[in-house]
Image (cartoon, rainbow, N blue to C red; front, top):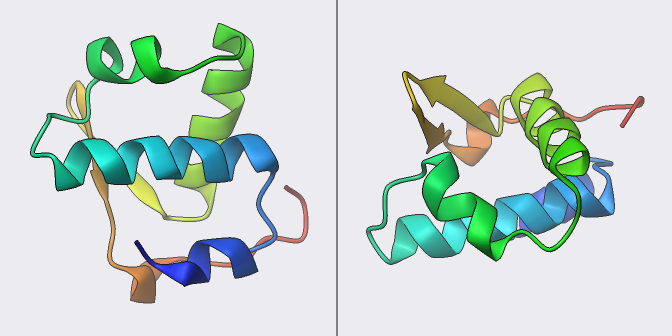
Length: 81
């Protein structure tokens, strides 16, 4: 896990989603909504907002129906999380 995630100014929800994604990726589980949603404890709307925030900060990218965690060097800070 990249500690840089805590320095980007992201919301708690976005960081929580990153931690879920990191765990899935580490476990070699595809980063697809069917694998993410059972681990998400908040509303679907918050999941969408957290995902949008991670995409906006280039932490993740969509690859068809799956997500991919980008290298930390590609991540950008936000002032409007």
